[in-house]
Length: 314
Image (tube, rainbow, N blue to C red; front, side, top):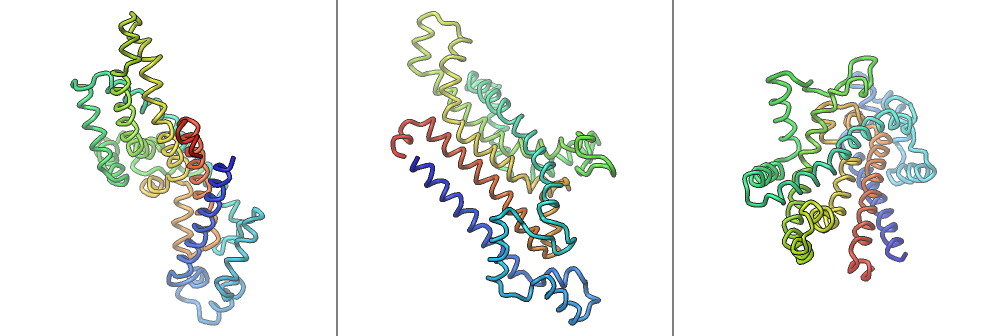
């Protein structure tokens, strides 16, 4: 219980630090929401009047304290650019981001376990070398490079898939599932490679374990040896790592969304940053950070539960 409370306190501190850093960064950026909203044609008096109405002429600490007090009560403020509640703007985009991350997460686990098991059971053979080479290449490439290569291979050349993930007017993302393919493949390629390699290494070690050898000597069929001894021993150490990648997929899809123009939280964040719309930037950042911190906290607790030594230390 003490360890859980300590992790909860650290999670709260992380969210607070993230909100302070983002607020300070937006304040230090040149220009403000009033100048961005009125453009270059407005005079100093008009800009000053709008700054006063938006509260931008108050001290920085006062603006942050006002935002934090209302955020703790569930009110993320009002957009400087549109005048709409920030929570409403986020709700419109969060569903698309969650859908993208969820699709990738649902595919990640079976693919990582399946490919890792398949390669590990064929260690040193051609299939294992192909999987190992492919995963090593994917681990070495940044996310935006992989996404660009996928666009060239699947969209620009053969034209099988749209190069951008923008739904047609009047249709949502679910109405055009093809636009999900490239962002999902990009996210999967980033997360899948490392997990496949971990499962493969675990399978190779578990295959030569004393328990597996004893079972084979006892006449247990190979498929039962794999299901009863090899797979559990290989997967349990990887579960916390998988949980952290799931946290990334559900809270960190911003790069893939930006690359493909996907209508998720990334687009709202980019537009708000350009407009110096601090409440929207703060709100989106807080939501993404909260999801990431919560899922990483779950991964830490899961790692402790699966590791008796760590459980005794906590």
